[in-house]
Length: 166
Image 1: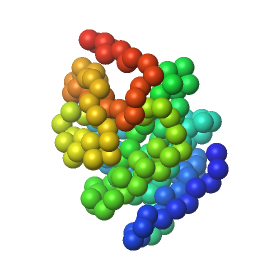
Image 2 (image 1 turned 90 degrees about the horizontal axis):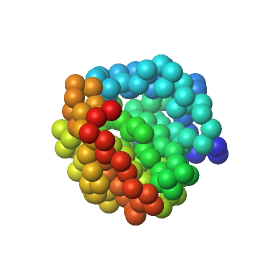
Image 3 (image 1 turned 180 degrees about the vertical axis):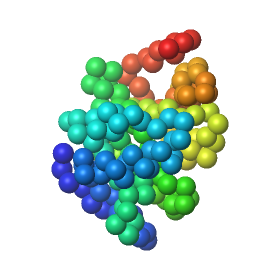
Image 4 (image 1 turned 120 degrees about the vertical axis):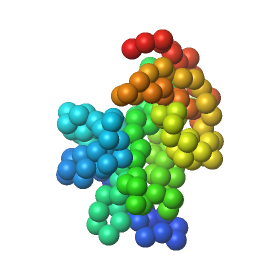
């Protein structure tokens, strides 16, 4: 994957390609942003090393303050954003929006999908402002039994299954 480093207009943060060297920072970010759903160690290693995954970090003053990962699912002709998080003290500064837009540019798919806790209204409003719409619901997807709202931008090339249980 090519190296990416860009600064959002009028901002103090940069968007850069994340690497395995960001493991500890990503682990901390996951634990803070997703206390119930933080990825296990092997998932963190995978997201930082598996080929063909878009992995970007937002950096401010030399510190990772946000992260996003996504990949293109060729069999479904759909891309998925698997995670996006910004440390709480850095939210509402355009970092999440910048990460999503940078990831979307690199995914360049027919459709891009993501899932979000139904209680995370702030994230849902952000996704809607970026053109995502509600596609369906995965019941009890998250830890604690909360449903996931599946959202999509663009026109999906395949149907998505919404099983009653996992």
